[in-house]
Image (tube, rainbow, N blue to C red; front, side, top):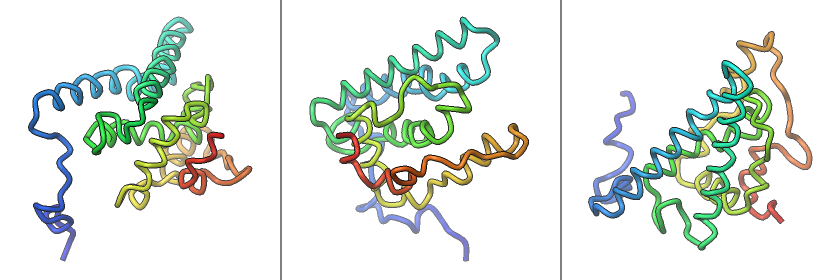
Length: 176
């Protein structure tokens, strides 16, 4: 018997990632758009640019958006849209999860590391700790996909000092 999406959560336990309240949906939609344009798609604009100016604009938009999201989280909220997780968090997570071990080098997004954004770092660790997130996130697969196909199958090993990324994502206090 295979896995079925309905078997994972009962209706009572299933998280509502797109709440009915129009003001929450509006915030989710605005953040989703920003995250897609400047971060998720921005990774590829920076990584595969048609020229230096395209790369520079994508680079700036990516890091400006990270700074903006870090500032948003500075008010003490647990998640991007408030105290409960929404689809926005799951939309942003894979890109930030792979930033240091992949995008920093492969996509030339070497302006900062996640630890340079203390509120985003805590958020990243918080989302990583949500039920099912760490078990469905594979840095091995991520690295193989980006480096194995394009860099003569040479996959960077680091970061291993002071610990691996998998260990670091469980340590929000590393930002101090």
